[in-house]
Amino acid sequence: MSKPAEAIAAVTQPDVKAALKSSWGLLAPNKKKYGVELMCKLFSLHKDTARYFERMGKLDANNAGSNRELIGHAIYLMYAIESFVDQLDDPSIVEDIGRNFAYRHLKRGIGSKSFSVILDTLDQFLGDSLGVNYTAEVKDAWEKLVKVILALLDDEKK
Ligand code: HEM
Image 1 (cartoon, rainbow, N blue to C red):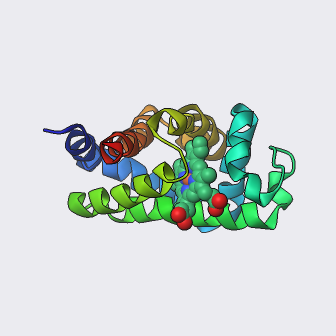
Image 2 (image 1 turned 30 degrees about the horizontal axis):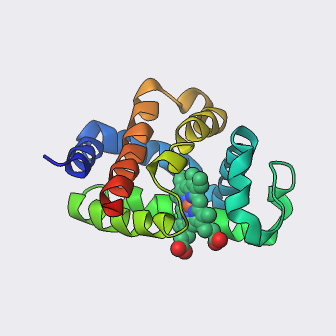
């Protein structure tokens, strides 16, 4: 099995899907709040990533929440996550949207190495946002979703 196929098989296991769907259900109703918090966490843990978003202005963890373009991006980002979570019952659609997602990041110069800053960012963001609901199973499930993206970023780059 190819690396993307293995990663997609792992994220579409019933227990993994259930952990993603239930934890996402706690975040999805507040896309603006959580999307902005995720971006602020990215800028606070990985300050250098702000340069990718230069067209929106000079961003950092303190001012991102009041930048209208960044807020728009943050909400859009949450819908992108939702599209993965909503399609977990169909592995071939997960691959289709994952390849499109990978292409859109690769064309901005973001390959798997640059994208992997999301691993500790998501870990801390989910810990802060989900509190006691951030169980070991939930952590593992989100890592599996990121691994799908990382595998597709590598695959699309070929
Ligand atoms: C949870 C992880 C992430 C999600 C769900 C996400 C989602 C998205 C979406 C939906 C877009 C719009 C794509 C388009 O319209 O072509 C986008 C654009 C972008 N993403 Fe991501 N992204 C994530 C992580 C990252 C990371 C880790 C970086 C940088 C290291 C990054 C950098 C960018 C950049 C620079 C753009 C273009 C922004 C603009 O100028 O409008 N993303 N992202």
